[in-house]
Every structure is written in C-alpha cells, then in structure tokens.
Image 1 (spheres, helix red, strand yellow):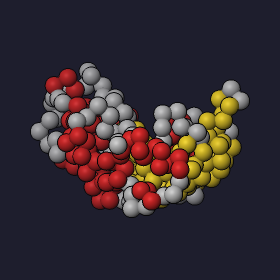
Image 2 (cartoon, helix red, strand yellow):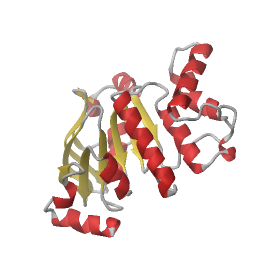
Image 3 (spheres, helix red, strand yellow):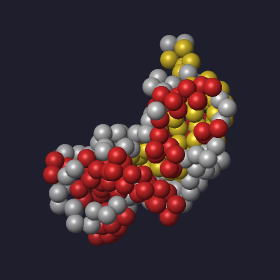
Image 4 (cartoon, rainbow, N blue to C red):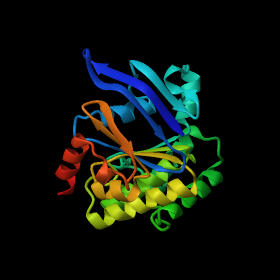
Length: 242
C-alpha cells in the first residue's frame, strides 16, 4: 500500500500540488485522473522520487519515502516497476535484452536465472516467441507488453503506469488493460495508473483519484464516479466521455 499525506509541490513559488492526500491499495488498480496540467504527472514523479516534494509524506508500507536517506530510497526504488507512456524500449536491444536489462543492472541473479525470469515475464504478457525480435519489428501494442514485462522483471511491490494506452487502438488498449489488471491481482501489486482513457478508468478503477488544479477534488471507485455530485468531476467526465 502507498499512502500520501498532505503533499505540497511548487515550482517558481506556484503550487502544482496542494495538500494532496490519498491511499493506493495493494492488489488494486488505482487510477489518477485529471485534465492536462492538473498535476497528476507531477504527482507520479513525486511518488517515484523523480521530483522532491516541498512538504508532506509518501508512505510505502509505512516507510516515509520522502524523508529516507539515499541508500534507503534505493531499496524502495528496487521495489518499483515503471511502464512509461511510450514504452521507452532500447531500440538497439532485443525484446529479451530489454526485459532483462533491470535484472542485469540491479539483481544478483546468474545469467541462467535472469533468462528464466525474462521468459516467465514474457509468458505473463503472451510474448513467449518474441525474444529475438527488436522494437522496430513489433507493433505498438507489443511494445507496451514488452514494457510491462520489463516493469515486472524485478518482481515489484509497486507498479506505476503513465498513460499505458497512449497511441493504441481501442482493441489493443483493452488487451493492455486486462494484462495490467491480471498482473496486479495475481502478484498482489500496488498499481497506480495515470490515464485519460475513460474506458480504462471505468473498467479498472478500483480506486479513482480526481485531481483538479493541483487539489484532490474527489476519491472513489468506478461504481461511484458517475454519481459523484462533484461539479468539476462531472465537467471532466462530460469532456472525456461524450
């Protein structure tokens, strides 16, 4: 579980996040939604340590990440998997080399153990026969699946997905959604997803956080969101659903 308490973040004396609090549950798909410029991307950067917060707490299973020393933060980061918006694969590496990259960099596994883990992760995303292909030889949907396989290679406790369906057709988007959901539940991962895709929000939103102008305006789930009674959220939904 990840819990954030009263987070503030400013740039040039202007608050981008103001008094933001939320709980992201283990084994659940936790969605963060909001219009462009709302602060949700900054929030994700704060959560993974790419940007320091001004004040507040980021608790990874009660470990105050924002206030840990360098070595302790490294230990938490080893428990984090990240699926980037554009998959961010290395063009010069094959599929299996891309998936194995974090194992090579951060694990103490032998080469044979690394390959076993690579093959296991590729099987999880239904890419058992794609080991030797290069990113230029596979589709956008396959690239996202390789990105997921790489993100789970180190068996993370926490998985962050930044716009996982960006650039994908609707059918492929649903495949990616199902994969993320299955992996989250099967391996009991705390998954946090930034998304504009309202189909993803409605299908996967065990927990949904709506950020508006840097403030957490609403929290709930996909069965509550259409009847939230929150005028700013209703306006957002009309823009992205209709």
